[in-house]
Image (cartoon, rainbow, N blue to C red):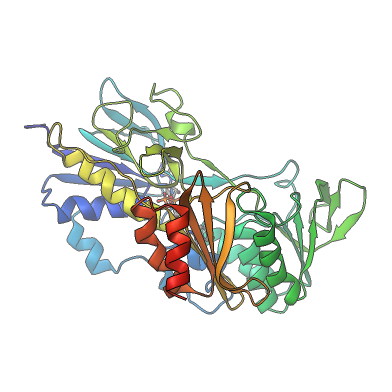
Length: 406
Ligand SMILES: Cc1cc2nc3c(=O)[nH]c(=O)nc-3n(C[C@H](O)[C@H](O)[C@H](O)COP(=O)(O)OP(=O)(O)OC[C@H]3O[C@@H](n4cnc5c(N)ncnc54)[C@H](O)[C@@H]3O)c2cc1C
């Protein structure tokens, strides 16, 4: 490595954050060797359509590809697809792959994302699914074609989107949620109720405050057993109870891990020349004064780029990665979008529209500061708050802004 700039960069995780890092390196003039390793056997594709258009059969799977072949060729990357990194040796600066091959690096981007949690017993029966990969999406899609009753465990965003897509296909849907309302861990209860309303309007049997004790069936699932002993009949089940960061391959490396790969405010890990990005990275976001790991699309793109820039930065020139987190979710004909941070105890004000109409903007305040903004079918109005969040606007001034802009 001459003058701090790596000559050989290896990216582990050939998906959204990894691709963003690869593209940014080239855009910033990096001319060295680029190697990407991905456990899936295909070039990077987009995950959001997997619970929406592809699951509903509106898109062919190829439409979810992130780039075309020409764009991939132009990057000049050596791809190792269908291969898994199994270990990282920081002293020799090498990554070991599942076939025993060792890849030396002088710059390393860790972008191995996250993997769905299963529930005890859920992997023993056919008909029980999680949803993360294209392969899992197509397997679920095939079953939904003939399914009569789907049971979704977990009313988070993935569970809610799967429920909406399945209703669109005419499948009866039950959603089971342990909390008193959907998204109750993240949002004040009135907003969870608005999310619940979306599903109740479409005939979903939404049961909140219930626990799952196990699964019924021999060979194939026939139902989900609840904590009170009752059984929800289902011929297909989707488990949507969150994800865990893919750090298993790093456990013996000595890298600092704690619910993800721990980074500093510039995406650098505890080891020189190693950065992390996307669902796997946990870093102090100085805009919010909070250490976070964000499991959303925009963050993977932005942090992949920031991590690449970190690798190329001259000593003392690294910049903080301090974005306003953003996500969206499409459920039925409602676009839900959120900027910033939120917790159930934040102050909440509906500043535009009405909760009951499911078309509104809600602002969240904490310690006198605007901390987040949520919209249902109000995309243009929501985006105006990004600037206010970036500027650390007081809650009072944000409410005044909302009033002035109607
Ligand atoms: C069904 C679905 C719908 C979504 N919808 C939305 C949405 O509407 N809005 C939104 O904001 N976000 C959405 N997301 C979240 C968003 O897609 C993720 O935040 C994003 O994909 C994270 O990108 P990533 O590159 O960090 O990780 P990933 O996309 O998980 O990519 C990591 C890659 O690394 C590979 N890998 C893992 N371990 C290894 C290893 N040891 N060696 C080599 N490769 C490895 C994995 O196979 C994977 O291909 C959705 C996610 C899913 C699953």
